[in-house]
Image (cartoon, rainbow, N blue to C red; front, side, top):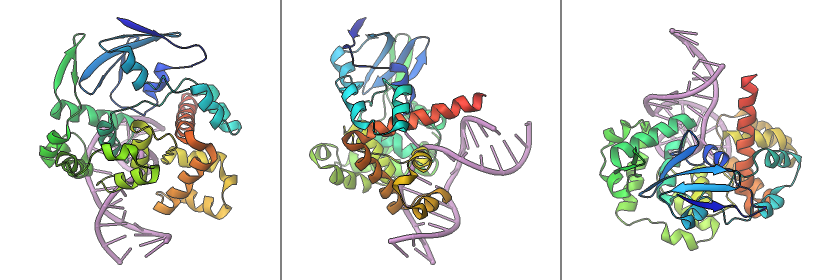
Length: 297
DNA sequence: CAAGTGCCTTTATC
DNA sequence: AGATAAAGGCACT
């Protein structure tokens, strides 16, 4: 067992960070969170300002959980109004993970037009079927399938994991990685727009998926993914930043056009600044948990 | 409990 | 450019 004592004034909330829906393969059993990153399964728990973990190095924990981000400074930068202030108050300590880009990419291709419980199930099945089995702490884990493995997978095999029409996107994207036609190395040094454009060329990757991958795995914190929740949040709290006509249009439609998405996302980036992605996650999780509390009443 | 609605959207087509 | 439809199937009401 190893531990990290959090730096004073650097809030971190493990539960919020792992349950907010940015990563899908973590499970809480008792007070321990169990997960696997790359080929390394580990467990972790939080007790006040102490993090305890097994089978992983402190350096990795620091990096993966974004503990090196200066959260107070970030929150200060995004705290532009009373709505975001309320979200910050409610979910302070939520941090953006540094996910493995490959797993993140496939996860969000699968996540389109699905709800979070269903996404978790799909990714579990996919890992069980195409990943490598490992055992840690008397529990079974599966590595996330490699591009090579998914490139070789049959469509029916993928559909069997519940991917539905997403199966062909996953297979095709996997082939581009397996062949070496595409990799993340080039993206890391690219400017935001360039990296985004490159991702958009992949099958099954639209603006929303690209923004999620940039934010959750490529350390592009200016990315501002606009899903149905964020769209509702903008309509509810930030309508005054747009023309009435545009808000009406955006409110009435089931799905956004590319241009509409861009307008909403660009608002997020310019309004909240270089850590817009943090603002997005705070608003997203706050609004979702508020909604849950509502439905309990 | 059945049936309807919605889901951290993308793509194809007009 | 912009609107519209289709696309698994699960989860929730």
